[in-house]
Length: 340
Image 1 (spheres, rainbow, N blue to C red):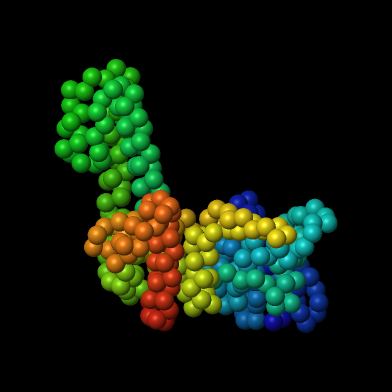
Image 2: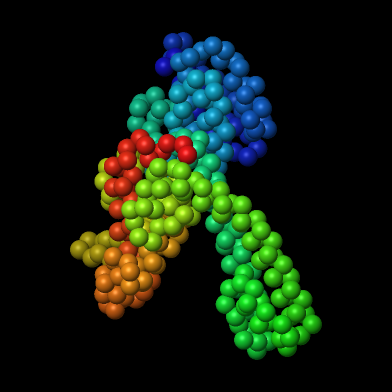
């Protein structure tokens, strides 16, 4: 690799450092502002050079940098932020953008850079869609809670979902103060607006879940996984071949339990929550279906709920689902990531 370098990505600038392995010359500097056109212009300096390798951390902004580097034929290495930081050891000096790029470049040359998986474009697009859908779902849920709280504070019987016309009809003639009526009216308009935004997304995700082999396999094989959650699990788990076993897949979800140990004492901790939040949400939603009598995990769910509680039972089922999904996607092989 004649040219080996690294980028430190920020919203305002890209700090770079690269070394010519043949001459030993090191070049450093910044690209500002940090956007695609300026990066593309900067990359022209390498001309027809086809032996390039660059590293950058998997933080916000890595996608466009990776795409532009690949466009000129560079070998891109996406560093795992936490593991890369751990390679520093104890902090002995101030951390700067320049030291970050040097750190990445050195470990890339040494060959011990902890790397993250770079998803193909179709997986990245699916992730963007499902995360947007989840954000809108959360926002709509927040407006539901605001409206319900206002109604309860006014002593009005609180109906169920306000996306259902019959429940809204129950609010007609409700005794509300002037300000509360205004708040409820505004909340209902926001719910309608968000629902309108979600409708085409729901259709697109439904089509993807039927046409994409990995998502369709998850939906067909596992009880509780539906059109939306199948896309979320497939996109966020990604290439399961990178996991050594199903335990690694569970760690990726963040549903594993941390353990604090000291001397001979070991105390159970909380969920790690280190993986993609959308993946945990999808697995938990699918696991809640185990409360239905038709679920194959229903007896196991009831036993856990009796011994502990319903939430812990659902989390345990979610971990089991993560393992099953891992095996399903591994068995599909390369077909699991094919574009729809």
